[in-house]
Image (cartoon, rainbow, N blue to C red; front, top):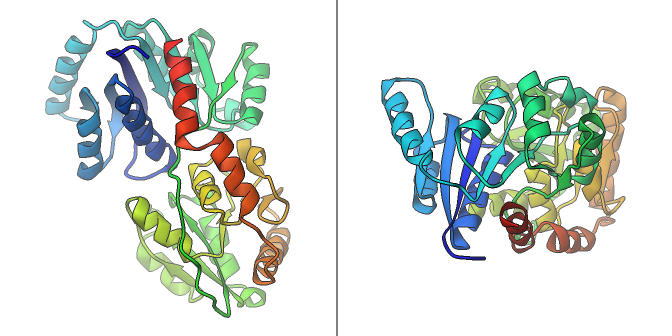
Length: 352
């Protein structure tokens, strides 16, 4: 790739934590390492100072939007500089009317839009008219899994290609043996991620041989919320790949009992890289990475508590009996989802 390529990365929002937030940071870091100048434009930023500093260390120009006069003036300054540039590519991520508007404000040879949620009928109901126009007008539309791309192609009557998000490749230490199986979740604490269901499972007298764990933060679930569930350990938020390795090393399995329109969850990719078995809702592209019926399990109906309970119990029992294996997951991750594989795919889409 020729030196001096220039791209604009735009996202509608950036929360303090989250899978897509992790992808965006890795995207900017990996693109900038390969002789590309990256400008970052976040419409609604809630990232912490450490994350902002990491972006500024790898990006050429950074605008992090918030309310207030200072940010309006900063945006004007950023915009006046950016409109003078002819970007080799504009990469947009997220949903909403602003995706379409940004594509008209900044000059580019190639507009690539990355849709990271499920793309199915339920997800399509949330698309605004301007967002649908963006999906139809972008030079390239990218979904994060094959299943999602197929659903979007039918709705949009256009080609939608598949490139997964970046994820952190994690290695884990040997998990300490204990009398109880440790199952857990890490990520955003919102109802759609099945937090209440995890709490209910932890309180079930038939599942006392399992200890449940949760990492993350969210206004709906302050630490005091979890105190009434003695068989659930709430650990709070963690930062960094090293901390993630410790989290996964403490678990025997990962649970994602979600009703969210999942695209291809970054957490499952990270769990896959470590070879940790998982049980997850069959939403969006999750089925694309279910490569082993014992170690990677799909749950069809999280609304049926007894069914969920039975599947969680069976999952824990099979782990305790040593029936799960890490080999297939690790091999699939290296072949399709490792960062070195994705860098080549994204460069091809952005610059060819």
